[in-house]
Amino acid sequence: MAWTSAAAGSLALHILGADETPARREVEQSRAAVEDAMGVERGRTFYLDQVHSADVVTADGIGWGGAAGPTADASVSPDGSQPLAVLVADCLPVLFVDGLTGATAASHAGRRGLLDGVLENTVDALEALRPAGARGTFGMKAWIGPGVCGRCYEVPEDMRAEAAARIPELHSTTSWGTPALNLPAGAQAVLRARGVAVERIDLCTLEDERVFSHRRQPGRGRFVGLVWTTGAEAADRG
Image 1 (cartoon, helix red, strand yellow):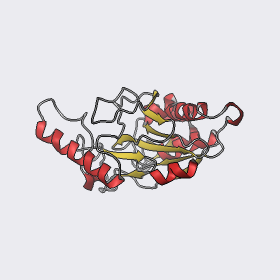
Image 2 (cartoon, rainbow, N blue to C red; image 1 turned 90 degrees about the vertical axis):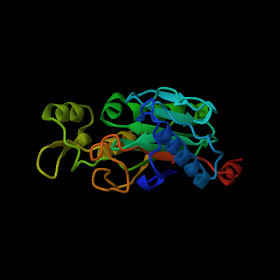
Image 3 (tube, one colour; image 1 turned 135 degrees about the vertical axis):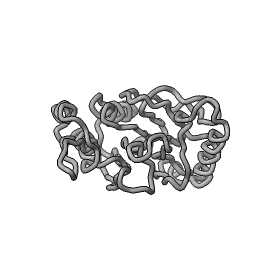
């Protein structure tokens, strides 16, 4: 489980125009370099075509080097064998490991995804992989990665009211006194309500230039949250 920094380069192809071939090569080289650092085969990591949905798909063994990713905002690897990636630049990367089955998952959780249930759907998908007699979330853990914080994520008052009606912990106020949303607190509340153990990385993408932020630099790039299983970890489960 890890997050890349801006120093690793942008890992996003979807923000490039059709005629940006040199930039596309840079992204591909950056993705390959990240995989080298992870110790996995180049092109093996499973990326998504993210659209702020609550849809979850199962990783099919085809990495970014073989085909375009499916349209969804969360992915699950049933045995943890395929590296999973989620692209972000203010939204939250939320990564999962199920200690019971070895399954892993990665979710893209922005305002819309949180409200529509992307995290609940991801937990449901992981739970469905457990044996019938072991359903539940005991032993399941999630890590909430860097995202825009409640001090900085300014929104209109009606948007804050709508979001807080669904997830009260989203309600926040900026450091300058205007309505805001606290995505990390909201995500944590959703997961804990489902019985998932949670760790949060307390790093605001708008405040910290080590990571990309769409609000700070629109279109500049995306970093990724990554979850993968090493050979040793797989052997321990066996």
